[in-house]
Image (cartoon, rainbow, N blue to C red; front, side, top):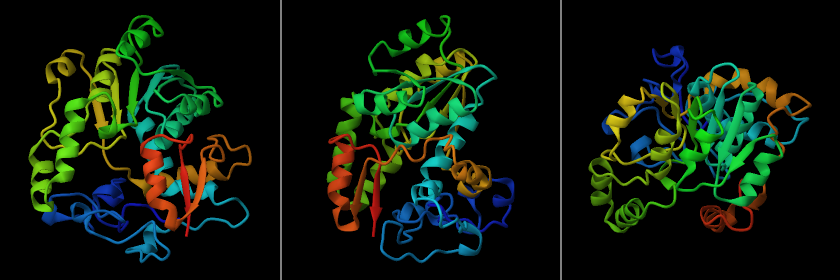
Length: 309
């Protein structure tokens, strides 16, 4: 199993569990953290990882040996989405017996909701797509459709306060934000050099979900961002955040910091996180572009696609 981020395991950051900030593979010319497999120059332009063959830098540390007896899905999600969800819930720091709201039930959100339940939390997931809500409900998750009054609904379910913490598992791809959608589409139409500059200086994110999380979380609560945001100048309601005394945690997942905790859980015969109930489509690598479009448009019940080279 190969993590999506590349870390050395021995630098100052790695030994402190911040492998996504690895000082050996940091992309300093871009002012970015550790290099990532299969990303643009922002994170090192390292080829991979949806490919037939993959060259893995620092494989002596990053690679995790797994067994042969269990299905691939038991281990595959350890490379990215499962530790990302695990870190998101850990960062949410829900008190014992508390309530966690998860915004978005894509692959990371599905696991975040199940991990919250695994930790004994009450979990309420917010998702506009019915098939995704149905999958979460199979694992004991309470679900709500995303509406303009979602903050009021969550407060009604939590003694008028709101959930103790919110995991935003959506990020900049949220819907219902015409200005953000326009900005993203405009950036995509620009020449590469201009698009890069726009991403560095403009607010191009769709912040509907993030603003809903800020509104929904109780005073003194925590917002944990697992969904990726890309716009440097995206505006934030800092007055409201300060007034509510909201704590925020975020960042690329430190995959190798969590794998030793997660490996025994995914190998547990009882499958406590339901790793065998996530994949909805299996394809060959040549079908990947069409699958990306299907996932983005939320067609055919597409929640998680497995590519088999």
